[in-house]
Image (cartoon, rainbow, N blue to C red; front, top):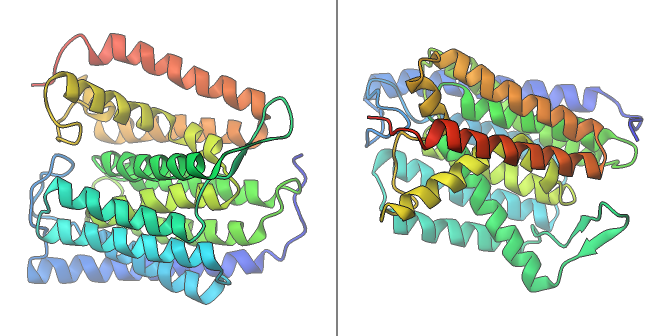
Length: 339
């Protein structure tokens, strides 16, 4: 199971360096131009309340990934759909960074982007059955699962963009796991591995400038884009939803719990607050860098489990994530509110 296919490593190293170099240079340019011309974004958000720093790092991530993709990746219908959906999501986020958009407009744009991606073939058609074989979904159910998954990953990464390096670090972990998984002989998806290294390079080049203390933020253009790319690549790679769910397990459950909590309080599930897991850890006195490292280390550990484990172990790991989240809800979230 853990044998790798024979590959020419240069075919991955060169795209990684190109995407990473482009992202590094473009982030530097966006940062300096943003400071010079006052491109600090049109709003002070719950994620980042420092109005002195540029919030347009997503521009660099998008351009680095797009250029690398067009140069190195052969195009087919789902991959064209990936680029179309990613572009729509990026433009929406960029507009929101510059001129805050109402939540309902962003939801409509996300529906359009996700709908087009599904139309181009980015949809879940089957998943592996732990008992053997596969479970094939009816077309309608597959569309609903795909749409729900993409909405979930988009908004999960957006929430993670609350601490320096957290969203980019999570995307990097996903890219590394997807890269190695795609090279397993039993999977044998070298082109998917290529897309993973392009994502990794695009994010790591930006992370140089975004790691604590950040000199630039990715903004909604970056966080929404990364969330869409993670969700879409997990589907294109053959329904690696369990793998992605393990890596994003705590953030996804945190997002779902927060939405449920807000609705119980009579608020919109999309209304911002400072009661997410990373906010709670900060309020408990854990330092900013330590919170980021703790969350990323946990996700990386589950990512390794996703690489090395069979279907049943993955299910047990998912159950463990859920159990730990229940404990956190009872011991961290419920006792008191952050003032």
